[in-house]
Length: 505
Length: 73
Image 1 (tube, one colour):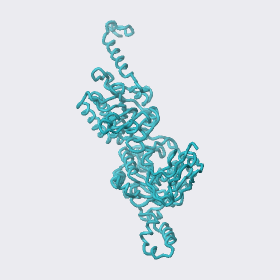
Image 2 (tube, each protein chain N blue to C red):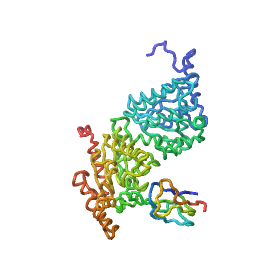
Image 3 (cartoon, one colour):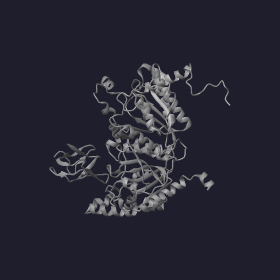
Image 4 (tube, rainbow over the protein chains, first blue to last red):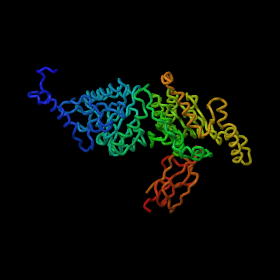
């Protein structure tokens, strides 16, 4: 059929210079991203390792900045078949410093992710703005920040810190949703130790001012510490598995799995009757959530509250829970900001928020007031109030005062709230309440401690028990521990009902 | 030397460890009381109690060292 003019395809095209030229360009390009220095994997290898095997497609691979590459490998791939955009800093080019061309390349990837509605993952390994590019570098960095913020209302953004990240390379992650750092390898700081010494005279190591321990435990700048690049990629994949591709996209459902059988058996007796005795909230969650992978964020920061992703009947849920086993499960500045950030994220992406309450209150005192606990506590109130995602709250033991409200109370817009039959809800704990209410009687009593204990027991039974709240309709019902999973699952099915599925059915 | 610290501002309610005691990782060394909660102070390592700095009835601040454990003894 083909006409005779068509040259034979198999034969080497003699004099076909443009083919050779392209091959050469591609070889040059690969040579540019090949140097790995002290790193185990190149920028391109990192991008390829992160996505499904063989799925990575690079954008503008021939892009150059002068004699070198652009300094970043951008492209897309899939995670278990779901598209994801990747921007991987190339530390082999000027330590990954962000020049004008690199910034343009990153912004192009951001634009694609935002416009098409796919998550974007930034693999960071960059010294910050490139000095040679001057104002053009700064202008580009600001452009990346602006798109980071635009993306917040549209798509999930993760930052992986795989090398020393200074300046702009540290600020961009702070504008993304979750930051994962590789221990002893990733650092984040405004400027590195050399500049610090020149600026203020302080002598510090890169680990001291920007290591993963500092940022995941103390500062809260990063949200997860892992031991290797492979673990960082695995954690990012796991995290994105709980999150829809963009705001308004459907949840990623999996088959329902029953809760851990042993934990289910333990659940009715897990919480000590005595409200002062601590227990492990993780174990309680084991008895309610689907068995299978969960992902706890900020596990070493603000540890009196837990924030984690899990599943209930296969549907991703965000869990906020007081952790009595750490600092008594109190709310303070750090734990409030931590929980507020998590609730805000869930709200943006429509991930139902399940709140498990056992809180003695906000920690009072000069230290906390000095840290601005009022402002930080208010952030938690605002996050719950603003969240449009389904909100389910269960009080498992005690909920006192302002902390009762802050932990996803009905008044903040919870769709359904329950209280376990042994729980207490009150403006303050029985001991404190009777001391105020019966000041005179206690002062005149022969044995004030005995009288206080009697009054406290009476208060606990008559005032603090959850029936008052249930009779007033402020909690929907008083339930048994073993009923929790069923109640929450029923409510979620109703609140997330797919009307299209109903029309088909 | 391992230091068991107060994780929160609290009143020292009970000190269980005595200098010279052999303790195992996970043992409760003392119990603090704050916000009507009993906060156990847990040994992070196994070893011999070198020094007990906590005294019952005293208020401690977050980060204060309560008990030192010599993990090599």
